[in-house]
Image 1 (tube, each protein chain N blue to C red):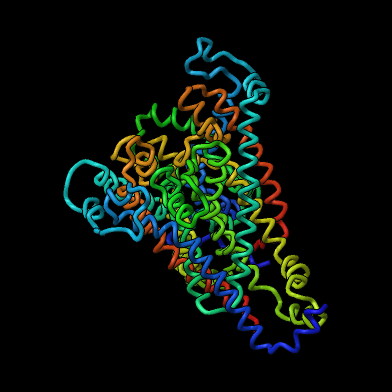
Image 2: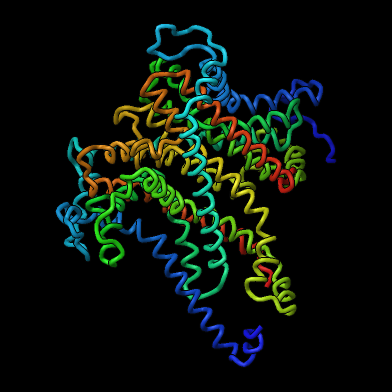
Length: 294
Length: 312
């Protein structure tokens, strides 16, 4: 009450300035909370080992170098650095294949759900959503038994196959509504011009649903990049081990080289960080495009 | 309703000139085949086999391996004290981290919805923890929380807040809360993005009306912002609790279920019993209990989603 009586007396601009200062302060705190841990990882990847294990901690940190990054990408054999190099390559191959194959297979199925009539359509769609919710732990034992019986353990192709089954339901779920939102008149015109259904998918639906394909493709990539549980169980050597497994392995050792793990962590974060920056443009575009009514 | 189209023209007419509906259906199933084969072999078949594991003795070290045991594995799991303890820890992790994450995400979104210098950059940066792989964030927090060389101990003692270094991951309850911290750090931005998107759709004139009626900032939040956010809040809460309930990665990398089983959640317990003890039956039974609880979340999720899902 008193506040309301007094408020007209206080200049509105001053109150506004005070509020802005408060927002800036909160924003700075948020920035610290969000960025500091990762910056610390980066600093650790550059710092010398003796600075990392000094008590009390040396701050500001001592001399820095890119030596560990050079060890990962440079020539050389063996050691954690090389393990990270192989694991990164494995992750990249697996995630790229899952994204590419997932988008193709997923688009075919999404088109079916969006445009064709067939028996049990709704039931199949819900079954698909249901598979997306199944926790990995519930299927891992028989998968492990089956995969090892077939001699397919420790292969990148096995991971691709397993990750595809995790990403496709999601791709279909999202792409179905994207395809569904495209006007049928485009397809009709193309059909009259002599296109086959597959050609309309290729030349009408895919180009028009590009934002959706990019968004789902990105999420499929990130999901494969981040996946740990199956990779932990199905891979054992550098032939197929992905980066989350390499990081877990070196973090679990008795003598942990945190400098090297930090380096691996920073490198492993670069692809998803870059993607997040670009992906965000899509999100923000959608938000400001639809919601700004001022 | 759009007019029905001939199945296919050109390219030799794949429909074999048959009845429109039949070939449309055939074509649909053809397109679905690759996805269906994948999901059947990788998900649905193993799902059934896991169920079979719960009904027969699949302890690989047992002398009675292969004997039909009915629902004994479930009875053993549900009746045991270790299961109740793991379930309790799972529920603690799920709901405490959910509350903190959603609360923090909401505050972040409210802040980011305002306009002040630098907010655009902040909006872009805030999502970055979400992009960092879970295991990297696990390793990162394990390093920050290190009992001897960790940055947190150094920072807190430099600030004078602690007198001696703490083993943050060395005591059961503390370790669990530190995993919650790591999870919240990574995922609160994710919740915030959802809330922020929803906030953009609030009708600004409602605020004006509320202001004219004399509502202060808190009342405007209570009667305008919050009711608007409730549907998003529910969807995020259900979606995230499903994920949290089956969480594994952070527990593996940060504590391996320790110390003194203090962070042994259900999924981690099932993993240990399956791959360390080779007791497939018990592991499978725990997994099915997890699956049914996640199914419960899914049903809630579908109920919530039904109002919002736009069919074509």
